[in-house]
Length: 87
Image 1 (cartoon, rainbow, N blue to C red):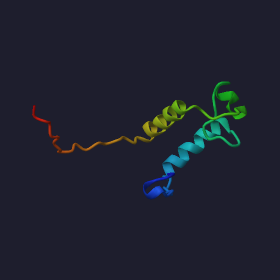
Image 2: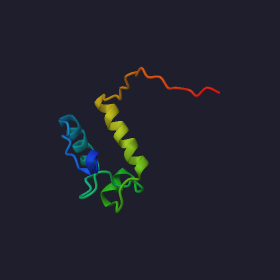
Image 3: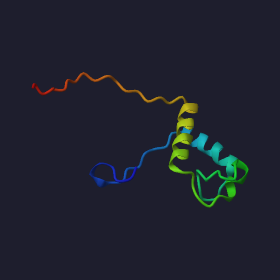
Image 4: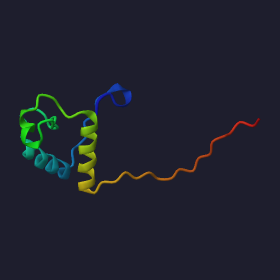
């Protein structure tokens, strides 16, 4: 993570399951430098891509990875009240 709290970079461990899934994904396109290459030429041409996926493409890919891993965002309800100004 870049520029986290205190403007310091943080190292975050990568779970083994995520690493395995990313390796399977890379095995599909085998681009030498890009993990998420642009797919304008389709998956078969991804190894020749000169640019990465756009931001939305990366988000969709990561959403698919998390769904396949069974990861879910959980938001616990919070009990907080907001004051409304009286008129």
